[in-house]
Amino acid sequence: MAQQPESPESRSAPLSAAGASMPALKPVLIVALLAVLVAMLLITLAVGSVTIPLEDVVRILLGQEPARASWTRIVLDFRLPQAITAILAGAGLGIAGLLMQTFFRNPLADPFVLGVSSGASLGVALVVLTIGSVTTSFLAGLGLMGDLALAVAASAGATAVLVIVLFAARRIASGMSLLVLGLLFGYLTSAAVSLLLYFSIPERIQAYITWTFGSFTGVTWGQLIVMGPIVVGGLFAAFLLGKPLNALLLGESYAFSMGLHLMRTRFAILITTALLAGTITAFCGPIGFIGIAVPHLCRSLFNTADHHQLVPLTILVGALVALVAAFVASVPGSTIVLPLNAVTSLIGAPVVIWVVLRRQNIKESFSS
Image (tube, rainbow, N blue to C red; front, top):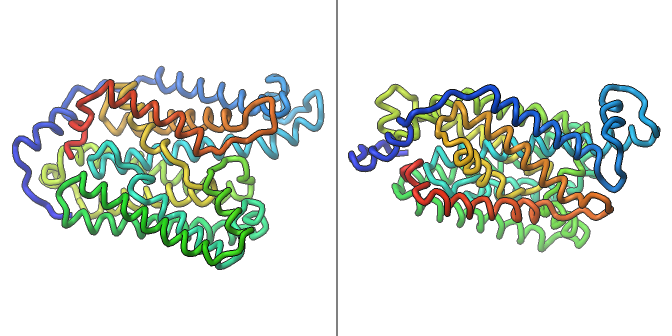
């Protein structure tokens, strides 16, 4: 990205945003969010098509025998992998959205809007047409190498779109123009996926459409062995990027004058975002709105722009939002499973509308 001097007017807004007094992250706030997250986790494990008493859920998690032996299989083989997947996906997508919004200094940026998720979908579609199918049962049949191949393909597709967006960003100063280009890249990759599926057989098309609905339910323990370390690694990398992200809020020229290595920082942000968005999309499908809604929710609820605080808060709130979405999508008390993307949109759209109405000067936090 070209390093151009910024006008005093353009620098004043980020300075006011980043230079504001940042309260120290209160341990009680983290503990409270953790407590709510644990409570939601237990509710998710207890309530479903079969309701299991909370005390029996706790016994199962502690390795003890519940009142009915079948409950152990329900919790350990089905509900617990789904809940862990939701926690990882919500935290990862929230962080990916936070990185994109800060990197582009645009409140509308997230992996989905900028076409990163579409690029990951293209990678998955290529694997589908090459190997044969895309359902999670098929992934389990492929074993560890199949899971790795899918994650690598999705991450490669996400990285390719990000690199194109970054290349365009070197020539375009306007954040809004770059956002429009990102949307167009998303349309291009979606068109490529449509062409690939056009020549596919009906069974694969149906499997791919089902995958695009998004779901946490089909991820197995074997797939979590691949997904978990990658997502946790991406979250850990986001912790290390707290200081560079704060510097980018002040503008790239100012950050460079403070000694920030811009190319190294861009590379780290892009790779982290691609790994998170690509891996989660590979196993859960393209899930929208969490990436764009959760960072805004954290900024508004906790009134901070400090990434040393936003990163852990986004992880916790993202995990909580995803758990709630998974709980709603499972329609407790029935065997119905709603499309996850529809549920996250129903939750995310009102949040974004509320944020826009509450903080009409939200753009100043990014100075795009």
